[in-house]
Every structure is written in C-alpha cells, then in structure tokens.
Length: 67
Image 1 (cartoon, rainbow, N blue to C red):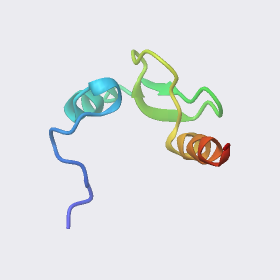
Image 2 (image 1 turned 180 degrees about the vertical axis):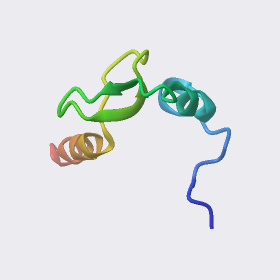
Image 3 (image 1 turned 135 degrees about the horizontal axis):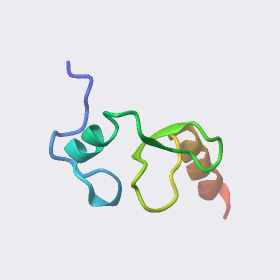
Image 4 (image 1 turned 30 degrees about the vertical axis):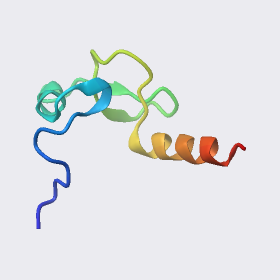
C-alpha cells in the first residue's frame, strides 16, 4: 500500500501541483503557521494564510461548530 494517498497530479493549496509543493521545501524554506509558528507544508513564497495541519484541523472544527 502506498503512503501517498493523493494522486501524483493532484492539486494542492491554491491550485499548485503536488510536485511544486514537494520541490518548494527541498531547501527547508517552509512557511510558518500563523497561529503556532510551526513549519507548514507550504513554501515560504505561498501567498495567504498558512496553517499547519494541526491548526488547520482545529480551525475547521471551530467553524463547523459555529452555527
């Protein structure tokens, strides 16, 4: 079974290809999460709000429960 459950051509955040996201962090230049300042899966050049997977999940839970 493959560890990568996304198709190799699947789009990532903002329509960027998965290959572009993988290549962006090769030099260790990942954007920081705006909430906890942990590294994210986004490159530093990504425009917009960047959240780590944990904060992204927590934010989704907050917005889902806010009737």
